[in-house]
Length: 429
Image (tube, rainbow, N blue to C red; front, top):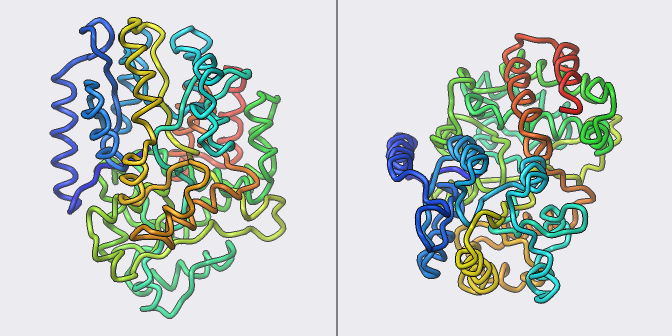
């Protein structure tokens, strides 16, 4: 779920198109294309760190935008044409690959080399474990969803970042009156809308609500916490809480991020990968202390722990079961020796990403951005519950239905009750 790094939103859109066209023209570099190990990864976010490590290891890599990658990798895996190293989010997608025998069991490697897994924070490492077996290894920074805000715009109206939902709603008319969009949103990409759903449901009902959904409990989507969360979302839409035309803004173009640092929007609910994106696009915005960050607000009467977070514990590498033995050996060597070595970790930290490793507090303290990086590290390490993004935790079919219904909910084409009815129909699929 990372975004393309660009110095301006206009350049972002142009270069993203070039990258996508180039990657498509190259075709598949899966196991059938040669003897060397291959990999597909995402543009943006931690891309340069990954790119550099692949070049050093001699791995042939291609890079794609988020949405394009998800479509391409599903097709490639189904056709046994996946790259050797498969970039993923774990969750439902990984479960389907494991069930189909498409990815390699890494448990023996983990048993022979304890540091292979033990170097990672347990809450992050366990996301790559299914039924007691390791199938995926974290490959980049932890990615909790953070409420970013423009301090300069808050100062302009004399406000503080919201700690409660009521405070958030009270800020909306104040920013609108000042000609500032309260929230940026890349609605065309759909998945940014999910972050609102996940946090509100957790704050209202706690993690048990989604646990019932993941367990396919009949009627789980009709939980009162979901109805209330979706009612609150539509109330925020009615109050003009989001930038006008949010449903036509694509996240992969970086336009939603640009609205925050160019002063067009006051707040931005997004994964922690937004920080390195902003740092690359407008270093002065961070250097001048204009970027603020905080946790998602509490909801009065809610059952959820305010320290709970949602997002992606990290992204992960899995190894294709269809790869040759030579390719598998090269991929394992990369995971052992190149992934998260000192150079890799230093590069992630320098770019504003926090590796999911134990014992790196001293390294974080020596970075250019210790305040932000420490906040993210502690947020992820101390969260009572770190909920994997629902579109990754669910099966691909359920995830597609979820994003479609969320889009309709935000556009007020369906009611909260209709949303729940539609999603209940996907249980067990």
